[in-house]
Length: 228
View 1 (cartoon, one colour):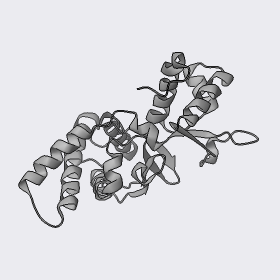
View 2 (cartoon, rainbow, N blue to C red):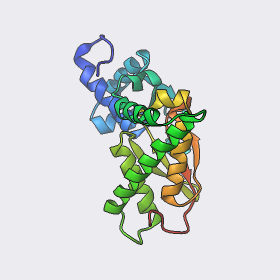
View 3 (cartoon, rainbow, N blue to C red):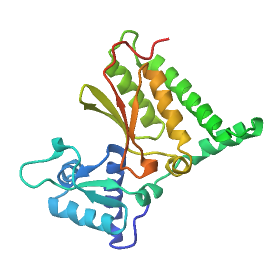
View 4 (cartoon, helix red, strand yellow):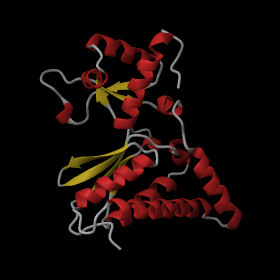
């Protein structure tokens, strides 16, 4: 991936910064400086260039837990332009869509395709659970396993505690541009998460709708999820 032409010797470093934010979500300059062993002045110079190129955007932190003493540090997150410069796995989606459309027809084709894709995700995740989640595991293990599965699928997912429940945060969406036009894909995917975890979940934000990260809230589970 290449970010602009200015100071080309520094492109690998800016690539590393952008990929770190893509895979782990919004971050402060201090966090990035420590992760990449760069001086504060050096990291800010790279961040300024990435913002100028439209790759990153600087915002005030939403979560007070990442605020330090005094004035809150800016948080840097990936823009749609930045995500477009990373590889999108459109091929699998296109193949699945063509296969489905070749054998089905009707007024609700898009919704039916979205559900078909969600079922494929659910089937793959169920198989992943069978290999990585022990019977009787706590619900936190199941939620963590779902995040790990999504990461393997290209979503760069993580889990964060939120109130009495948890949030799965997807920092990258391989089908963001398609989902922006057809939100049925996000809706069906959310329902698949609900079935996998055995509880109602709520999608709070999506990259497809312009948010910095896809977040799905999972309330405290009273039963073990992922069991047959």
